[in-house]
Length: 593
Image (cartoon, rainbow, N blue to C red; front, side, top):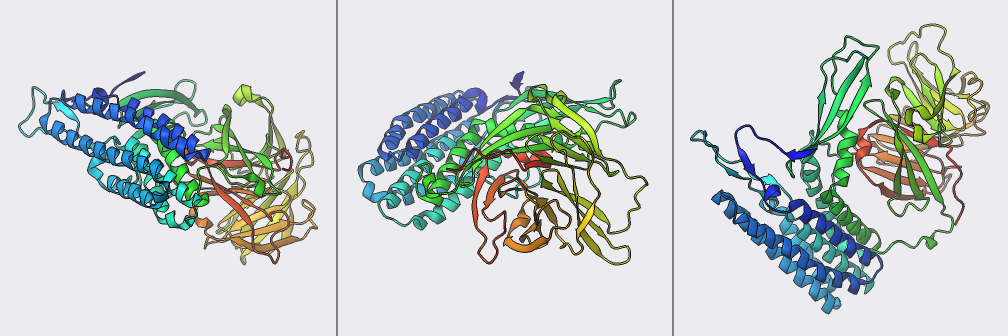
């Protein structure tokens, strides 16, 4: 269901109701997508012709909006809004002229790029340009101090801003192709990315929106409607309603029941993180964010390679395809899965494919979950027990698993926790789990232990005993495992270190390292590794970056650490997951190329 947002005592006549705003933005997305695709083929003339032909479409929409403004009853709003439209149209005409100049005089590409950037800077800094006064009819019973609502963010300049960005990109591409050094455009590219992207430290509701993307994301929110107490079956009932403050709509998304049978007298409370995944998906599907994604990718390509064209992978003699499997557990305990299709070159954003829908429920009850071989996971509980699961039928969702099977029994006696003592586990792949145990009972001790499960694929038998393999493990803030006994650690300053347990899981094997391989890793809220040197980090805003550490198997030794990437993994819904479960020791790659 979809309907206009109601009001208690005022009747709104919004720009969304009066003009084809959403259609206007959607049209802009299709136009920019066409220009971008032509630009990727390095056919600047064709892309410019496409731009020239399509500008008329946006002019028609702007004229339509201008005509409808005349029908709005609130005269102050009418005057302010018409002035904004006039400014938008002025910028559009200037950008249209720049595109013609580039087509006729490509030798002036540098100056044309600078002029396009100047227009974009003026548009971005003109905060009033992005606002819209809600035209309203004054209520019959209204007080003398009644006033209409203040201007609100609508983003009407976005299509024109997008055209200007593509003119800048095409001009910069032409100049670089003619021999102008790529760094000439570095500062303007960085500024543009700062305007169309979401800041990595931005969290909705905690940090005020600043960039264009943040304003659009802030305008799309999810309300959680819930029952007060669990129902007779012991479930708390939640309903998610999408509220789009820009389009002024409310839409029912889905319902969710969470099992509270162990706490029958507890009140139902809504964890705000319950709706983060749905909210992020709605944001990514909006035409505004899709438009900004195209702009972000276009500017990034110009900054990094000087061309909109796809990279030539032939420059890497040893790259290969990889399908990385990633599970995530959200605040409601739902388990979801994704395939990240990439290459070890990590030169482009990978393709992300969701695996089924909800793959499991109730996974929030485990203290840790570790994965291996693409569809097998180990779930650890506070009592020390470990359960084995294997996903056999994605189509069946939560019923498509074999297990659980207990492969490590609970502790025989209650564990006495002393101050400063903790245990955490690291996935070594192939049925190997490492435990980091710290205690300061008599003196500070920090050890690394290993245990091994022989029948990973079948789930039979149990883990062997924990064996200490290092009695002086470093003090890391974050520890995570790769395959073949590789362990990574991030210290207080954000430095990344490499270790390897030789001949893993042999408890007699030597632990190599620490070897410093990177810096600046403390900005991520989550960091984890797959096999084959792939490491991913998630920022507070949900943005995920993917890297490939080329010397993952044996370490850099005396050489300089060698990396590829990063590439941004599409979507920001990653911020909705409390736990990430990368599949370490995943299926073999498709082969070298």
